[in-house]
Amino acid sequence: MVLNYIWIAFFIVAFVIALVKLVFFGDFSVFPAMMDSTFSSSKTAFEISLGLTGVLALWLGIMKIGERGGVVNVLSRALSPLFKRLFPDIPEGHPVTGSIFMNIAANMLGLDNAATPLGLKAMEQMQELNTKKDTASNPMIMFLVLNTSGLTLIPVSILVYRAQMGAAQPTDIFIPILLATFFSTLAGIIVTSLYQRINLLNRTVLLALGGACALIAGIIWGFSQLDSETMNNVSTTVANILLMTIIIGFILAGMRKKVNVYDAFIEGAKDGFTTAVRIIPYLVAILVGIGVFRASGAMDMLIDGIKWGVEATGMNSDFVGALPTALMKPLSGSGARGMMVDAMTTFGADSFVGRLSCVFQGSTDTTFYILAVYFGSVGIRYTRHAVACGLLADLAGIISAILICYMFFG
Image 1 (cartoon, rainbow, N blue to C red):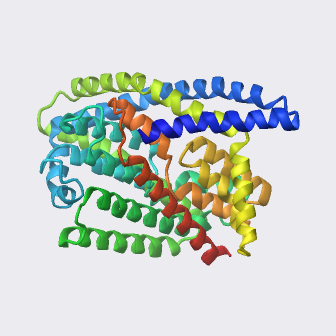
Image 2: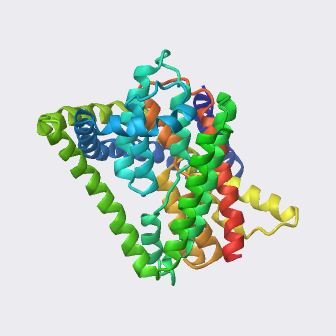
């Protein structure tokens, strides 16, 4: 329901602003720009779905081998103590916990192409447990918030963009992104737990969160000992080795169980095609709404208003120049990426705004895109508190990114 109101608001706000520009300022280009955006956004939505088809087929095929080979069940049993607290409505030892873990692990390593099909598989398994097929269940919402908070350990793509834009030290935003995305994820878990009345003050959860903090501290220390070129090489190599290890491990597990791995892969891959087709209408809807909102100039007006308000209070407004990336990120990953590149082009890759834009890009994920794809793949219409929790996690990531960047680069 919330997503419905937001989608309507995109169009109404965009139309009103465009009408004001036309009547009072004689801007005859705004309506053609909005209409062009509807067509281009629709095309983009289809191209995204088409591009996902091969990746979905690959990873859902690999997941099917993992299921038949027993790997997913092993992961489920190992993670049950923690997941039964965060996802109390999922039966203990259910295979979906293995899918959730693999999706989160892929996100942490920055393996977006692998994370999406794994996430769709997890959502499909949770839908089987859902008693109200058109309404998001509590486990679905917790899982979606873990995705939208964007916990990332190795932001490879952002490091590459910084190197291409001429940054003296492309990796200088590595630790700030790691810290900001950790706080975003932590806030998402806490907020969703409050909505769902999940008690986090127990030994298992506290040990898991403490272990995560220790792991992040160890990663920060380890990478801080490397020079920028070595850091880029190590992070990219580790991510790809882990990905290939998963594929080979699943195949070997299937062979050990005497599974016909080829037939299992084909069976899973067929689901990838149908899933890609199923999400097209949802992607078209959300991307067209976002595109019209941008084309009307509403985003620019919002940024200018924030800058005026910040300066009126006497606060430092240096961070405002990077806000387009932060505000666009929940709406569109490619749009936020464009904003990040534009900020580095305009202000410089090593400027405060350029660096902060990169940290914004890495500290959260595309909330509305994930809502459209994940919920759309299983036909969810009523999202309950998913949007609120996802956006609050995004807000925590944005605030953390600003404070951390002032600490590191201000």
